[in-house]
Image (cartoon, rainbow over all chains, first blue to last red; front, side):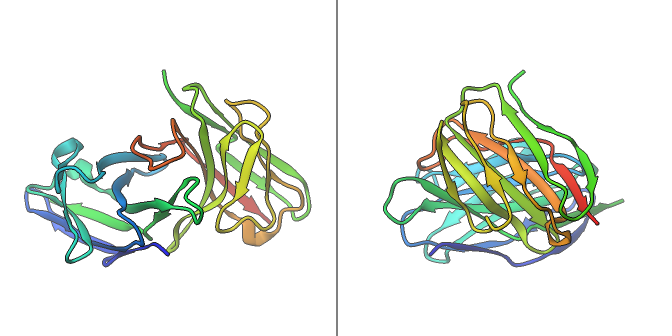
Length: 117
Length: 115
């Protein structure tokens, strides 16, 4: 069975400093991995995805994530935080339902990023 | 504009009063899904549909029904709502149901309160 663990429920950084949001996963197969962002009162928006191509994935708004199979991790980083990055971030793993007929998405519990002046 | 539209955005109801939350997408997507979001639990899948007339249970289907009579619409029905169904609900769609190489497109959510 697949699962995803976001190691921090809340992260606070100062504007201009690096961001690190941690995600570990488990999967029976070769998974696809995603990061989604949710701003207040909005739906989720895709930041980036890993689908077995390059292990370092670049996304929107300067975010990137590195797939490390040996560590079963997919941490999200950004070199310099901006106030507009304050939001909730979800790590998501895609795996196959039993029988292989369709994919199943499993969401992490989310990390709330606070950016202070 | 490509979008997933949910209605209503906010809904307050009483225990036992049937309600429907509508979801419509204009992208001709095959796959549609409903999630509920609760603090500390992330998003949990309620039901999903891989195509018209094909629906299946997700992780938390109890107390919910869905239908997929047309490709664009995927309503969520609560026949007899209870307070433990108070939550933030999201509808999402995707072009394909396998491997999710294309992203999910989410609606803006429906905040439901059952008293």
